[in-house]
Amino acid sequence: MTKNANTISMLKYSIERYQRMGNGAMCQVLKSKLQKLLAQQTEFA
Image 1 (cartoon, rainbow, N blue to C red):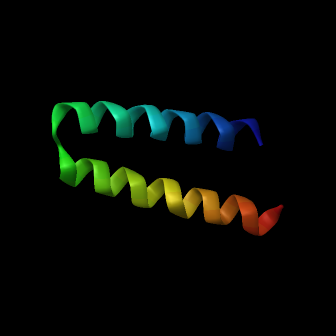
Image 2 (tube, one colour):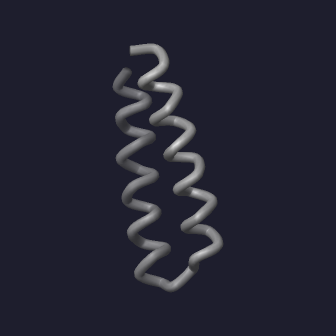
């Protein structure tokens, strides 16, 4: 569970950084990865 929590926080941090840099494409890719991970996490909960 900690591995997923670390991955989620790292993705959120990366999304913020890419948003500030104006890189929308990479931001969208990371957001989709985050959504998949969150959906997977709620599926097992």
